[in-house]
Length: 373
Image 1 (cartoon, rainbow, N blue to C red):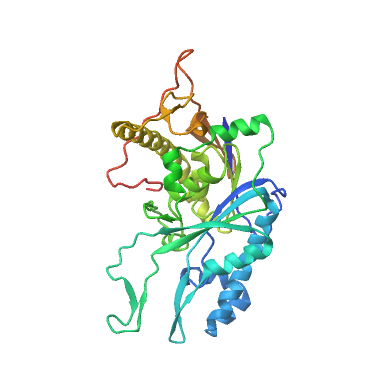
Image 2 (cartoon, rainbow, N blue to C red; image 1 turned 45 degrees about the vertical axis):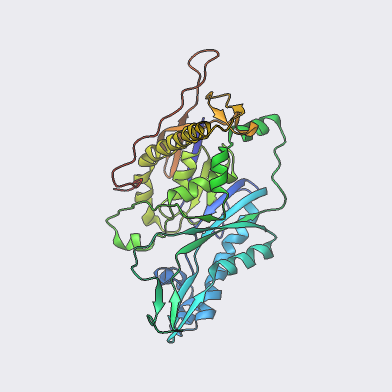
């Protein structure tokens, strides 16, 4: 089995090389309007620059979002019926003309996506780790002038039309193989995620690092496992450092990523090979986690009625009996900015035996999964 990972250094407002209704899932995080680190990007448009310089906050906020709207319009075109779009976004706080205010990015995107005809599904809040010693902004301990810090972001989840249909027997079989574990379902499909950890990303280009707002690998990996099947095409119109591409490669999905800034190219290329190890580690962790779950449940005297047909271990539901997880094996750049990933498929050593269950690779002593060194 193979997957294709393609990078386009182009404007995502016109994704002309992507056919209509050919993308199954979008996982992305755009530049955040009204966050100063992205002002230079938005201010390439004269009207935004004028609004910022004249300190007209709400006008600048709206004009920035109108630029993003053009990308959301393209998402509606390229997604298949029943396709899912996951948009990671945080709100912004900013002081303009001595007036501190919240700029609700998530609600502005939500309004436009609904206008396009998307259905909003239950969203996710995930808490971002912070090293800030204080939990407020503003005038300290004097009411009412202190303000809450923003310690969470949103993953807005949209569906184009009704539920996605799997028509042929081959499609239905692939969907069953792409299942996740029962206990993963219980963790992943909560509307609040408190357990995500960031990934170190080092680069000698300090300005490039400032322009990157990469989310954790685990966030993208979960969303891809939750809302797509093996062999699907995942799109990230704001690829940045390549996190979505690496997660798609780990999960045996194809990916197309758009990025305006070609300066990210070396960073993405450097991350490709480590992403294979990262993917193998994450797959091993999933199997180790499931086997520990089984041991704990059996020790508590709770029955497990089903058996996975591929690996031979107990599973809770019939829907998990055909579950299989390919291991990413190798990645190579076949043509410029086009990478091909190959996988090790589960194979039984002999007739009547189960496939070998991959083991987790020990996590580095830092406790973090490193993509860039």
